[in-house]
Length: 78
Length: 145
Image (cartoon, rainbow over all chains, first blue to last red; front, side, top):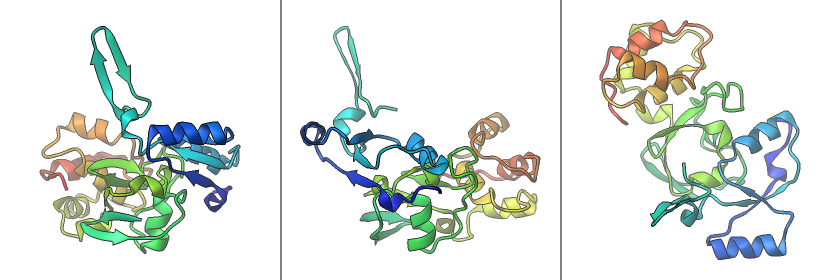
């Protein structure tokens, strides 16, 4: 890999509220989910930014729910 | 960080952004998982995370916290697919073989040829032409590991 992953910082909020507070206080944080694009960019040496916020543990974003005529698909739903 | 690796509870300290592939090979000394392309195209580094085949080159270590990870070493040379790959000469250079076998396990028992071909589309082999691999998988009822 062209970029050392040890140079990357990963913040790990445990709740959506914490995640929103982190983004408010540190707007340079880049939210991460599956990380495919991140590691491809690391490999190509084209990664921009070094501070990331991990959405992966935020299970409320993993849900798909239907309510009346509204379908809500969480950002982590696959 | 705690997780289950090849059936054993482990606690391994590594940088959270280090690739699962690298932690397996360097911290855990499990070099059966191979690096091919390093960008999720070839499937050589396939491992099972909670039973699902995943490219370990695209997974940060932090994402397997609490997960159940299986590498080729977790089969302990006892899975019938491993013998079948030898019997049918489904391996030549061998780089793709650990990922092929783990992806095949994820197909479940007794997959059809169509299911095998579709299930292995993410696993590239530049030696065998695939036919021997398909024969090997068809020759056993691959049980979910």
